[in-house]
Image 1 (tube, rainbow, N blue to C red):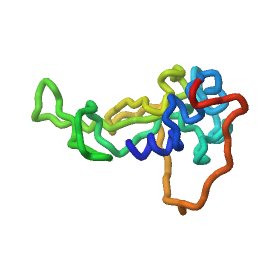
Image 2 (cartoon, rainbow, N blue to C red):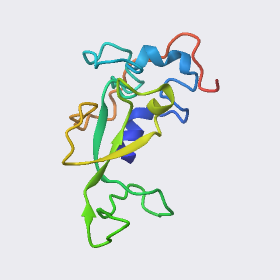
Image 3 (tube, helix red, strand yellow):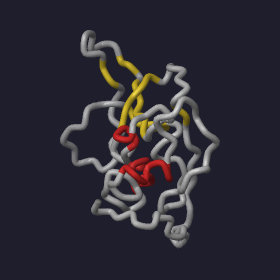
Image 4 (cartoon, one colour):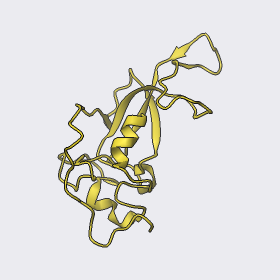
Length: 150
């Protein structure tokens, strides 16, 4: 999920890839809605990625677990153990991004959730990814008036 957050943040350290001001979220994400919208109809982040903050949550391959101290930069961890019966392993995986039903605070770059891989959930999808050359830089897509400090 470190890769997902890196892609979503697009070099920023703010709540959203476009800054911290929620007033711009509607330019980048489908949220607080009753249904999903067609993809890539909102603005992309600075890496040219669409719908990172909303429309559909995205499955990540990493197992779900509480954050803890670690020297690893991108740990995958073991399957989650049931707290009542530690012999039962549950395949909970990380979900990132907001869904079309999410509130603005649940669309933040750092927000994460989980679900079991056997779950059929209409709010969650997946993103196909590929490596691209480092010299490809999309044009600036920041909205006028947005700032990283607000």
